[in-house]
Image (tube, rainbow, N blue to C red; front, side):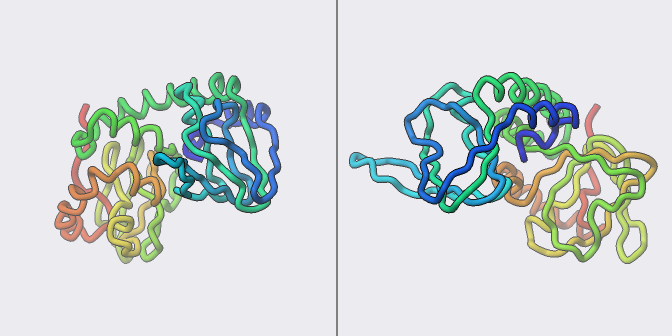
Length: 255
């Protein structure tokens, strides 16, 4: 989950203890547009359709759908506003809910701490300096922090690409057909070419010399929050072609 993926095990345990199960049948209204925000939800199983009333006749239009692992309901709680859309179960579903008070005391404090930490880091990554402050905050909120032990393969040549990575700490070694072609350190990124072009991974990337900590975005989130940078990254493809790897060969983090 994007909101809680960065939490430590102890924080996740506190979060789990505060959540409760909600079960709905197909057609049940989970959230009604215009109501006060009471709970935040994570879908355990089932589906939820989202509808927004608009126009003079307040016609209700379906705008998106959520499935297993998706979450919703945080905006009204975070910003103390009324519900901006209605969420209706499209099938029998099981949800985990977190009430407003618990969400704010547990989630918001953790989110703000991680947001500040990630924002400070991202502002020193050269390619991300093209983003506005709002765009940096959007990326910071969506990042998931992942740690890989020495020798762990983060992505393998020939595999389908589903994540983008920025190295926060540690060393990543890139190999192509068994030959080392690049070494990446803090502030450098990899994995975006497979997401931008739908080509398979062009190299194997492995943690070396100790833990490798990365800030990561999945494919869907990358497309949503990295839009302003995708054109820049596509223009940089000549650099990747020189190295023959799915990894950014330049751009160490600025001190």
